[in-house]
Every structure is written in structure tokens, then in C-alpha cells.
Amino acid sequence: MQGDTIIVEAHHRRAAEAIAPIILSRIKGSGGRYVISVAGESGSGKSEMATAIADVLQHSGISSVIFQQDDYFVYPPKTNDKTRREDISWVGPQEVKLDLLDESLQMFLDGKVEIDKPLVIYDEDRVTSEVLGTHHAQVAIAEGTYTSLLNTVNARIFIDRSYLDTRAHREKRSRHKSELDPFIDKVLTIEHGIISSHKSRADIVLNKDYSVSEVA
Image (cartoon, rainbow, N blue to C red; front, side):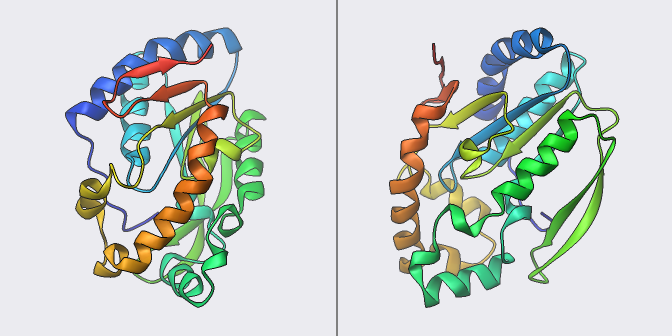
């Protein structure tokens, strides 16, 4: 998504370095392209972790592409916020074209070197498209709140930090004051009720202290 702010900090890099040996063994064992999802609540550091993981994998000679769930929302951000305010029951996985994201990831696994995908222009509140070149990549990383629900994923990473744990980080990334108003707290409470249950789908859990646990 154009207009996003990603702040990779030392704790993200340390966590990525702990995740890398687990992921590397799985990538090498796959014998081909590989898809990772990074999920968690709003502000938990999904974009940062995806970027940090891609950087660490690059140091091992494995290139990645990142698919942001934000590009696959039904409505662009400001329109989506308006829709939520008109009907809060809109909050949830139905806000996202997860089936389309699955299709993009399947094209990646199928070896497509160019993938036509949506692209959100945040400041203009619109969705356009872009062609993502993937010829160099062995790994695709899909990051977003609901990416644990994707079908076309080889390994699922879940960041176990709630919206109460992540307020400071959300403030750093906030694009608009409306994102931190009381209504957004209601949205985050609803999201928490949905997303917290997705931890059980994870192969790797990033704990609140950024330590890493591999799920047997």
C-alpha cells in the first residue's frame, strides 16, 4: 500500500533472526517456492516483521516478495472507515478479499513471474493495480490481520500481542487522528475477539516479549 509507514526496530530484527532458522529449514525442504503468513492484531508489527524476515532471508541468499493484506480490502482505507462507522458489523474478515489474495499466492506458487494485484493509494483513498515481479523470489510473505485464514500458506506466523499491548506502536504508525479515536477502540475490541483465536492456527508464535516459539 502506498502511503504506509513501516518502522523496523531492533526487536523486530532479533525476532526475525530467531524465526529464520526455523523457516530456512522448511524452505529448503520444500524444494520450490514457499509462502509465509504473518498475522496478528492491528499495530502488532506485522509489516515490520514481514520486512525484517525478508531482510534476514536475503542474507541467506533467499529473496522474498511481500503481499500486504491492506491492498486486498474491499474498500480503500478511508471509505472502509466510513463503512465501519455506518455499520460496525462490517468489521471482520469480510472486509478483505482473502480469496483474491489466495489466488495471488497460488499464482506465485505456480511460478508466475508477474502477478497483477491490487494496490491501495492511501492518500487518494482509491484502489488501483500493479504488476508485481516475482521472478527473483523463492518466498512470498503475506502480512495482515486475517492472513492466518488464508489457504495458500506453507507456514503461519502469529504475533501474540493484543491491541492493548500495541497502542504505542499504532500511535507511531498512525496516518490520521481518527485512527486513535474511541470508535477505533471499539473496532479493535471486535478484531481482538476474532483474531486472538487464530493463534491456534500458527506454526510459529511471536510472544509478547518478542521471543519465538515453534508449535509442534
